[in-house]
Length: 319
Image (tube, rainbow, N blue to C red; front, side, top):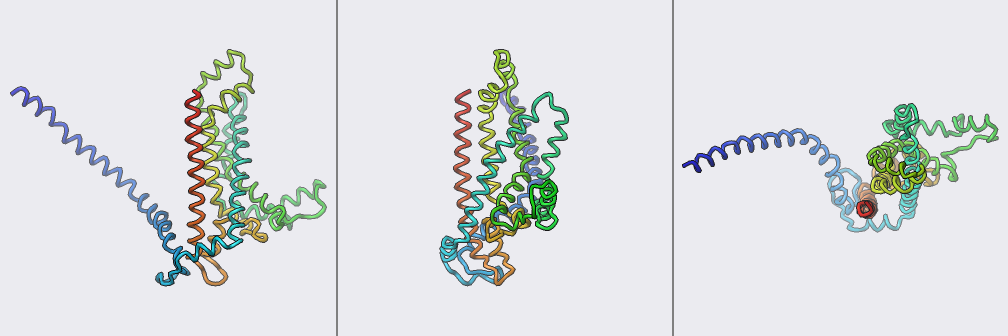
């Protein structure tokens, strides 16, 4: 009898606990439901439908009737303008990763030193472009680099470095690198914050022990800081590369892909066909280009993700 009473007493709190957990989970689902619904409507559904549109010759209106099979994909692969935009997108990504990531690391190391005053002010200044609307930045840069009374030309002419104004965004020799430099400046603050977070998470005991052993600042950087930052750095490279492969609003507002498609990116190429202001829109063709480019981005992301995993594993093994 004692066994029965003890088991009854032990089982009584189970139901209220389960009821409480169920109610808690329902409240969590209720709060995330709006985000899930909006994400499904404006992200999952358009991506899924683009795979269907890619097999039709469709202008965005009316039912899907004109089935063309793989014709849109073949036309995309045979279009030299698509491959030009594809090459520009890869070059833009490469420049962003090669220039922005190490520069952000160097500045993060500088902003992390103890003797530097006004760190919060510097971090805020570098982070301000990140929260500024990209389209607005592009429009402002058009005036700054403009050939007629542009700020850059005015400064260089007054300093005697130029005798005549240059159309920075209208020249095939300078337009692409100007877009790259603006892109680096625009997202520089985000990479800086990532590096600062990684640096400040490093164990201080290792640095103190190394200083006691007589290690110099260069040795601390080479043998402790850089090896421990490799996992964080690989993640930053991954995010920088994936984000750089999808540059649209900056290019659209600055150059619209010109001059002579010199700054044309795949996202701008897709937009031009899907929402063409000249002639009939070709949503099916644009969807095929988007699907092909999406596959390429996915492959690059997987390869970089594998690099992140390998880097993290080697770092753990070394520790």
